[in-house]
Length: 186
Image 1: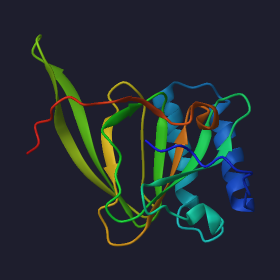
Image 2: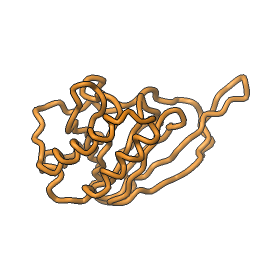
Image 3: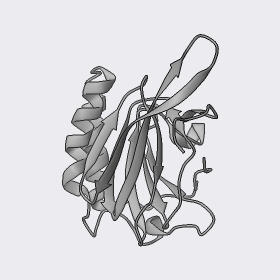
């Protein structure tokens, strides 16, 4: 996974409104899956808006997908991150430390979801679903059962906003574990 870009963050007025909307949901103290659902409802109307991110927050990295930490709540309750994906860039297979909501701001984000199965002697990953999230689409999840790989399968830059129920500026990543188990893929 990548190390976040930790620089003073310029917040657009739209991003500031989104952060307030997320804070109102998170402060309700609801279960993680319901929190993720409600945060996704707040995120969706902002996706694709030209005034959500600054030009710097839309910059990629030719070596790997780039993570821009846009906001981290002081109490660690949530973080907002923009991930910029150039064509072909991908994550390893991983899961997360907390609930997550993802919304595609530009382009499309491909995702393969997995389930870890064991026969008592060895474990392997079984692909359960392939998803293509397009601009404006939102998905969310809460551990356990959040094993996946994400990539840009398109021809242009993809940008997605990820909202995590943890302080990514402190943790450096939302990844709990990277999986090296064999998969059922060819």
